[in-house]
View (cartoon, rainbow, N blue to C red):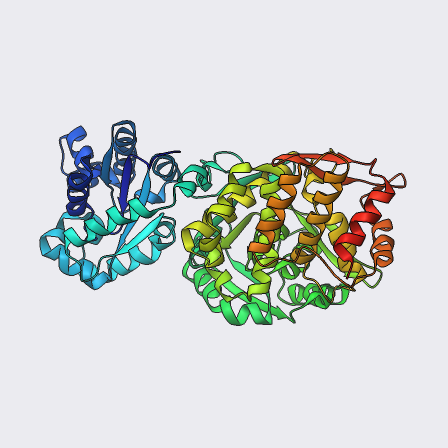
Length: 560
């Protein structure tokens, strides 16, 4: 896109000033000003409160969506939208596909003061003895959606004209590259998911389909989400001690608010916990509680918890409902998606396991604010890998919005994480149990990466760090045998380094890595299968890489 979008959509709660600010911004830009509430009234001949009273909120939302589509089909415009318009995925698609989305925010007390008594009475959702409490409730419910906007203007203490100028500045300064490449998350779903409104994507595996929710703050709606899936009664929360201290209270409160009776069990953090002994302890806990097949287990934590709790859930009473709530970036984009669950044996990691798909995955991007920077970088490695193997637009988005992603800016981070998850969801949907070979492409960077982890006894490199080194090794192998363009090798290296990831592992013995590679599960008929890139989004699997090339590349990435 060589020019800026010709539409600006203003979103926010009642009283945020959308209807007042839209004409001011439109006049400044020489555009048309539209208001979805006004378009609904024009189409029905009724005021909004009358539509609510005669037909109900559901019908109003349908009319609102139709009005939005009309606004999207017209010429340049600034569109003031209804406060709940972002709640529907189709509306998000329409807005994010055709314009800049700006959230006008303010404290609930400010909103109430602006509305006055007449404004409150005009809005059906605010009527009642305590409109301030209703505003606070709406803000809590919708803030996760509002934070997906391209930018937010804090309007407390500003005049309408000052807010309008801030909106214009946001439109003028938003990076063109981000407009061109942002590839909106709501279009990136594996398939449309009308049965699960608000889902970022859906995994449609042979053994069953399930939604993946990716939002800022959605942990607070965990119980509501589970209830919408038909779950009820007790919920058995399994978490590690560190994660539970950070997020356990919110999870339990969300479950309780939706009518669940939560029980919880914490385990020590760390990979050593992922053992048959700990699985047996969890079996004992579930048995003591007389857990029944219809009662769900909630896996709240990183990859260790999703693996361990998932394995226990899959094998206790021949399977309980499972809901993953990943709280690390690596778990969100990798471990929680695809149904792989396992525990370790002394001989090897993940040696006892199963494929067991959850009922849902709930990714609250806000939980990542508690992660150490190194853990975040490790997760970004897997997300970047997904872009490299499947989505040129996403790779460009990583490059264009690196600063926002590193700062965990809510809209940018939610979009990129959901887009990355959607890539894995598509692959898993087509090759659930690694039977067709399609899922093999997810192993880009893992041949050397897994070997590096093993050779260093899982003590020196986090998984994503090892995969980053492995991706450079794969890129260099591809370059040397004429598969991968040299420019792509350097582009990959720059991006990984930008996200704080290693591209070399100096001091690790080449022979140790080679021994670990020889034991890799990806060895078939005596030869390693290498996932290489012909270009971004064009992975190939090669088993004919000369050993001399592998040795040369290992020497270059592992040498002192």
